Image (cartoon, rainbow, N blue to C red; front, side):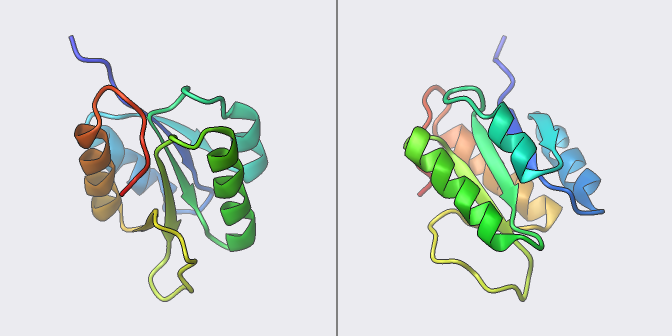
Length: 121
């Protein structure tokens, strides 16, 4: 039996349940965190196959969390969700907040590296 892939989703927006549902429909186990501070305490290198962070209203805090994760675990798969029309930070792991697009990107990343963590290309 194949292990379910674990996704930490840092998202406190009102439509987060749509993203959670879309990820679960793709077969992922989703661990939601409402706040960046909560995600910091839950993150341990190797605990999650992927960490998805909503930049929301605190883009600088979200980027700071991404940088902190990369510093502790350089091979951690990581995505930063950015809303349409928001300024896009200069990062190689930015993705849309749209539930289906997010779920597809997560599936693409985790199918590409089924047994090891790695950088998102």
